[in-house]
Length: 419
Image 1 (cartoon, one colour):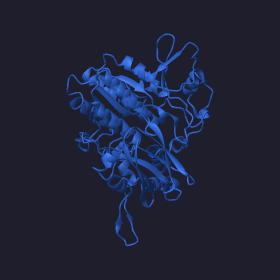
Image 2 (image 1 turned 90 degrees about the vertical axis):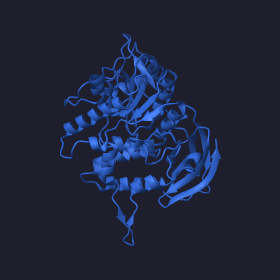
Image 3 (image 1 turned 60 degrees about the horizontal axis):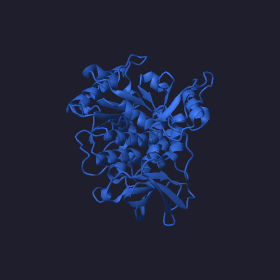
Image 4 (image 1 turned 120 degrees about the vertical axis):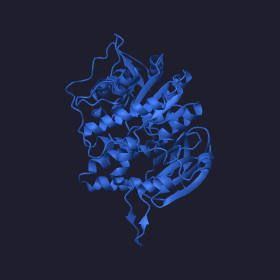
């Protein structure tokens, strides 16, 4: 799995010569220093279209990035493109006597008496991050005090009220940034555990050696950091298989398993990375399809069999997770994902009469107070506009925002807005 550092090492930061033969800012430099998303979007699209040996990695990164800029259909299409629709030979599980429970409350109940809770995500699904925000707030009510995430930077306390573009690769997604902002305001201490540069395996290391080095470092870093306070209760937010509590078929031992072996702490692990519906029902995993058909949920759920055991996603089974979360298939609202309506967000229509024309336009709402402190601030919400859009629809929590449109040429300010 790619880390933030490996993503930067794939060529995103390669400079391009200008007409005057002067090095122009790289796409990654522009997003870090100026907060400009569009150059990196166009660069990734070029890499995918060019094909070649690096196209598969570029497509995966494009899926991550399209989620970051609010293009959920595009993110799903990019992620699913290499894979055909799943065969229906196995069919869904028998859920006749099963029951569905609100996932947030199910997690809160299962977290009683636990010191560590681990929740994963798929990096191309922003709905996972919106759900993580709700879980964090609910667990804060029960005494959880530390939020540890693989994207957080070393020695960055996140206590200055600003989430900047260089504060963490995945934090560039406004939905992830919202989780960090909300958690910090709720009283969480935000801390990192990711492998540091001085802990990484040498480039010559094999795949299994690289996995072992990273997972060992993550466990050690969490023990030395988030768990150093014996009273701290910790919510760990990770990607995909890091919460696996049993070895993979190849024999890899991941973060959660190593943490348990080192400390004796059995973390409550919650898998959601494989629990969201695909771009179309024909692509749904059989278990996801069965849950959608049986319960037609309108919010994330945990499903229990009659014997009290949890129904798992395919990854939940593979990772030996304690719980699996199934996300609903929701209708869009004015072209935006339906899950944005969860929580305190409100829909705001924006008149685009003053917006510049163009095929690539990104509508953004940036927290005004943060923008007054830093030049490159992660927006509170953003998404790609259609070429003929006359109005945009943002989902914002109460606050004051600067609205703007980003194009390949830069930013066009629209207005300030108080929600």
